[in-house]
Length: 436
Image (cartoon, rainbow, N blue to C red):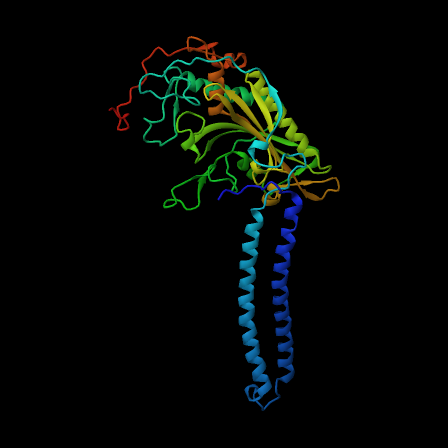
């Protein structure tokens, strides 16, 4: 079952679990130490009873009894040591599943309790999207943009990739590259440290894990986000206090199982593979507010990007049950998608405090020159497929062409995306639509 934070979850509730685990472990350890002490006493008694020559040791009844008792103790000690290891592993694995503490301002409850912090921009006017060609699927979102206008190969015919998958071609591919380049150029100006990598948090939900065939590679998954890949860059390392916060940016291909695709089997909203630009930061914890400040900074960068792209969006303070295990606080940004006739998540930013750093041993040298656990913050700068949905659906013109936002025009080399002059590919494979 999906693990979520209950509405009543706060840090104090979980602070009692660690002592409980320690009490159980301490009880087993005390039993083990008592046996070790008793065994030492038996060995001392054995040496005291060791008979002088010519009397042989096995001829002394007390000596033989103690030797037998010693053998029994050794067997019991071996069993207890194994039990201690199993107990430690069992409770340690359970402890790893405990979520982070929660910021006191985070709303309590499920997704319906999300607090709207800000609404930016104006909702686009009503769109009258061109109809799709007969039998032809639509590309972005929910039945909005005909595939003939966004050069691509739609999902159903891509039988060798599986659903939901897609190709971008022509203007579609150029728009993806323009989005990535625009976002990365902006981050480089704000982020002096650049890192490229890929990773997947082990505590991710099943919808985020894209598992490789276990018969070929056991317990291997493709990366669902670059967050932990960058965290792995800092793993087992320490940064200097004067260098914090360390800000990094990453462009990577991400893979998701997207188990909820049954609700949206078409379009780009839920896909297995996509390109994403991620922000990741490491802060000190001298005042307790450094990571909160970096979270606000990442959120400001996200808002700047989406505002310059002309999107209508809202910022949400996500409630307890919507926080992943590492998150102390999380902000989501949802953009208006006319084709879906509702908002859709395009970005998030999370403050993980010391949750990841304690597990990955990410440290910093404090003012006294001693090692302390750092705090980590992450945020999505651009998840390409959903950005394509929001941009294409919001900027479609009456004739079906698409206006390119001003900040992307130099990278695209055009102001308008028009219908391609070539004839779209015609699918002739086995997944033909049924005809009655």
